Image 1 (cartoon, rainbow, N blue to C red):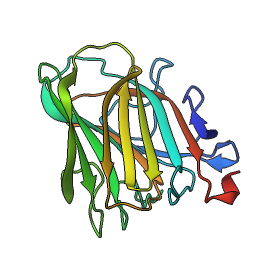
Image 2 (image 1 turned 30 degrees about the horizontal axis):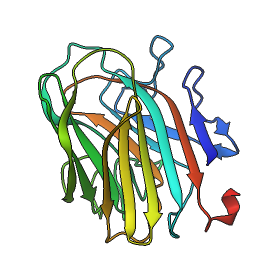
Image 3 (image 1 turned 135 degrees about the vertical axis):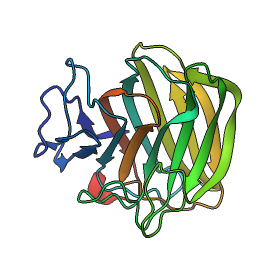
Image 4 (image 1 turned 90 degrees about the vertical axis):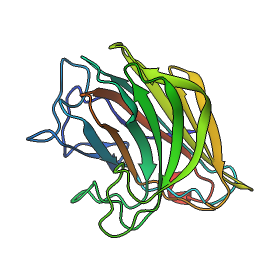
Length: 221
């Protein structure tokens, strides 16, 4: 796996170029991205980043996104209210609208809401917002319940891998596999946007890395 981009936000610069590719971030915070206590990103509840161009088209093509997050508290209870995912069609000028592509999001409970983690597909389209709860199709849910109910630092890893039988998707929290799923209807995906959102809690977000192994993308070799 090759590191395609990294961001620690310790000295965040919206014009910075990482590994030869610009990382563009946006949030709901007034004034934009804000470094908080040397940890991370926002005093808000929505963040979206525009990723380097990559296409999962051939079996074995893989992209992995790794980051850390923390809910500083107090933590409100929401079933599936903490959302994260990868999407097509990211536009730096209007990053919350995923036109015209598809995307996948994981919904995680917070506080006392220990519920299964669910995976949904968003179809995108004109006027549709990522992580908005609209244009979604249920894909899968975890076998057990899971929730974020503390204020400590956690890590998350999202992995997408193209297979002969469709797209394989997995989520791990703190190095532990939460769920592994597949979508046989997706034979190609260009995940150009990452988004994370909390319906009721402020979160901090840091140490973002995206890795890729795309045999079909000679420009990434």
